[in-house]
Image (cartoon, rainbow, N blue to C red; front, side, top):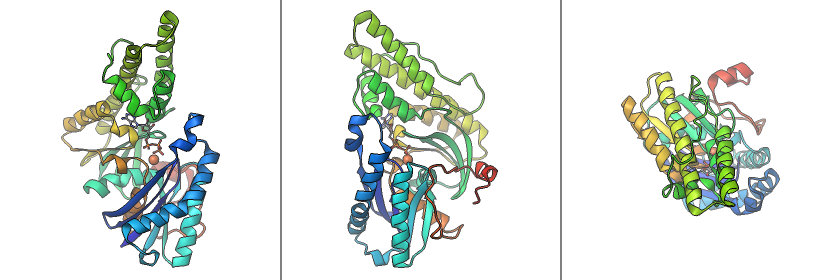
Length: 347
Ligand code: ATP
Ligand code: FE
């Protein structure tokens, strides 16, 4: 079964061809340089870039896979959640191709794509616990089937990646903030600044990173007021302190999520922040405490890509019918089975 995946929900235009668990091609065209001057993703610019590039990216994915359009058995497309302009472009292209080729089309929840990736890369068995931790998301999910997710908790404000990016900007480190903070932290002393571990005193698995960002800003301001600026060592110490606080929060909340989940076969992580070694070591400790493996897919499949969308469709084909031409692009799209029932939004 050969499936073409299309992903355009944020700032990456992506297409991939999968044959079962074999990734024949996975093309990801980033937009970082387009948004660089604006300090964040500009929805209007993102939408236009997706509309312009999607055709080329799909063609390239087919070419790299050595697959002709006529050999595709199904199309998978991110239907949400995300920036609506990009999602609409992807869904329209998918509909056009599905109609022209007369093949089924599956609208996939972007988060389901991330959450099912450990099954693509490591054939992890259900049920498992997934921490999704990226620039836009942070949540614990118990994954029991291709369309069965229970949300155990998540951030109530910023996602950690977003906080890494903002803090990097505040202390004068380059974007993307995650890698530059991790690099600076290697030379920093994490205990110089007493930064908070938000919500650790509160029960459950919810997290908050916005207050931590503000606390880091205040620590920076204090140094600047004293010395008129930040030295390299100040930057390193702020980076190390912030990173340690994020890692502590994720580790402790993960411990609680593991305790709150039923049986699990593995603790898995996805999203760009999963690249962080300090965070990984903390999560690994939790997994080993529970006696389950810690699975972090390779980074290219951990960050936004279309292979995960194609793979999610391959799994969901076993349990549901394809979507029709009435498939709509949705800026919001709950993943958790219970919250979908509450919203009465169907399957
Ligand atoms: P989405 O939430 O839709 O997946 P995204 O593009 O923001 O969107 P990713 O591509 O998964 O998310 O990850 C990017 C984020 O990961 C950025 O915020 C970046 O700073 C962060 N990141 C990348 N490397 C590291 C690292 N080594 N340590 C911490 N954060 C990192
Ligand atoms: Fe994503």
